[in-house]
Image 1 (cartoon, rainbow, N blue to C red):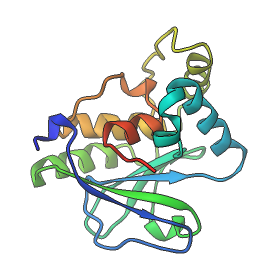
Image 2: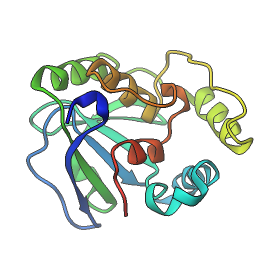
Image 3: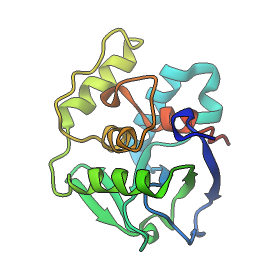
Image 4: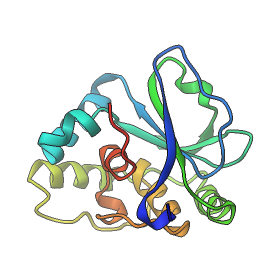
Length: 183
C-alpha cells in the first residue's frame, strides 16, 4: 500500500511488562500514559471521537523511532528528547510498523531529530485542549514549536504521509485512527 494512503505493515500491542524488539526508524509508538495528564488527553479524545473513542482513544502519548538502534524521539514537558523503548515497559503501548520506504524513513527521522532539545509547545497544548473542548470550532495556530503528536505528524509528512488535520490539531487518537490501531 502506498505510504500516502496511510498504510501500515502491522502493529504489536505490548501490555505492561512486555517489550518489542526490531524497531525501525520511521515507525511509531503509541503509549497509554498514566496519571492525570494521560486521563485528560483521553478525555479530549473522547470529546473528539465519541463513537470511535473505544477503538482509538486509548492512547495518550506518541513517540517516533529515529534510528535503527531503536531510540525514540518524544516530546514531553521538558521538551524534545531521546529515550529507549524500555522507558515504556511498565506502560501499555503499541508499536506501529509503517509501510514507508527506507528513504522516507530516513527523512522522517532526520526531520524529527533536528528538533532534539527544543522546548515543548505548552501554549499549543492548551489551545488544542480548548479547541477539542469546544468541538473543534477553531484550528490551533502553528507556533512552529513541537507537541508530542505535531512533531511526529510533521516528520511523517516529510515521509509522504497525509493527515486529515493540521499537525497542531492532532492527538494520539488521530494517529491511532489514521493507522487503524484498534483495541
